[in-house]
Amino acid sequence: MKITKKRLAHIVFESDDWASRTFDIVLLILIFGSILIVILDSVASLRAEYGRLFLTLEWISTILFTIEYILRLWLSRKPKGYIFSFYGIVDLLAILPSYLSFFVLNSQLLSVVRALRLLRVIRILKLGRYVVEAEYLTRSLKASFHKILIFIGFVLTIVLIMGTFMFIIEGPEHGFTSIPVGMYWAIVTLTTVGFGDIYPVTPLGQLVSSLIMLLGYAIIAVPTGIVSSEMAAQKKKLENEAADMQCPFCAKKGISHLDHFCRSCGERLP
Image (cartoon, rainbow, N blue to C red; front, side, top):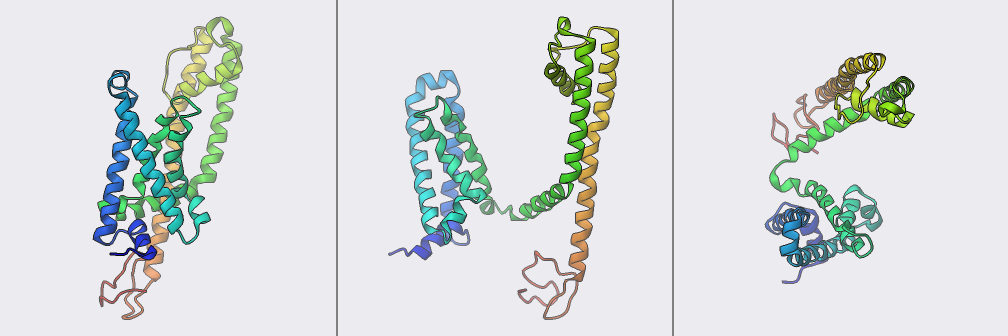
């Protein structure tokens, strides 16, 4: 049976029949398999024993992904749009590390970026409804961007000031050899990570350290509050939009922009 370009494009880009769904499932298996190979190849003992097998399997998957990338490029109505789209860039990054391994040592390990390709086949797992939730969260984060940016600037200012104070108070003899080192310590302390590689010894330094620790707990709560308030605002906005929408056939209000059919009359919505 002859497969036309239109039919082939449907198989590659859609997932509403047996052929296109099978293509997605095979792609999903290849992605998981190639990621597993990269992970196993990073284990020295396994690489010593199965290195040649891992290399062969890695190049087989790379060639298959390369063919798929060229196929998507050929089937796209706007090839340039595909190349510079999010998925186009991810598809390209999925195959580049293997070719770069000829020039850069161990660059093939970066092939784990193929995990991002799992986003493309999420539809075969019946998780489409969660994409809507992800979009809702993304909108909330975008709305919070400027507030979070100002907050980060405030935090960096505190880090700079506290790092400078600790450089003056403790000095090189206690490990604070420069202001950047003091800033590194301030970030580690402010985020309550506390590696312990550098720590204050003098009483004044310990006092400053205690203040930064207490300030860290307060700072952690701020971005959470910003995003939460924006999520509440976005939810209210969507509810208001839904309340204004109505079915063009029966005039039933409260139709969601995600509905394909009217919940009252059952007609397909435009």
